[in-house]
Length: 108
Image (cartoon, rainbow, N blue to C red; front, side, top):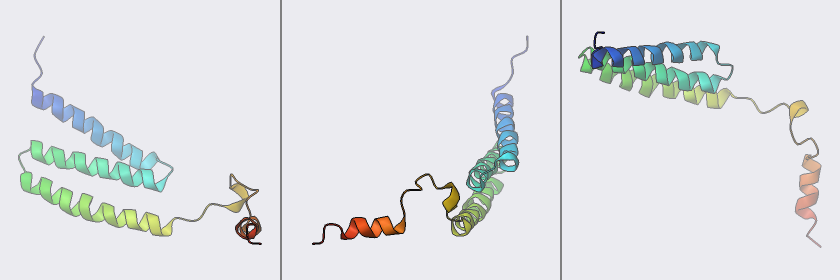
C-alpha cells in the first residue's frame, strides 16, 4: 500500500471544504448563512493558492474577496433584512399598548 503524501491529504481536505462550502452557499435558505459559507469557500481557495506557492494571489484573495466583498455582502444583508412578520411573532400577547401600560403603571 502506497503512502499518501501530506500535501495530497491537505489538498483533498481543502478541496472537500471548498466544494462543501460552495454547495452550502447555493443550498442555504438563510442569506446570512450563505454569506458565512461564502467566506469559508473563499478562504479555502486562498489556502489552495498557498499550496500552489502563489502567496501573492492568496493575500489578494483574502484582502479583496474575503475582506472587501464579504464585508459588503454582510452590510447589505444587515441593511436589507426585514423585521419579523407580526403574524408569525412568537409573542403575540405583547402589544405596544401593553408596553405603554407597563411603563406608566408605577406612576401614581
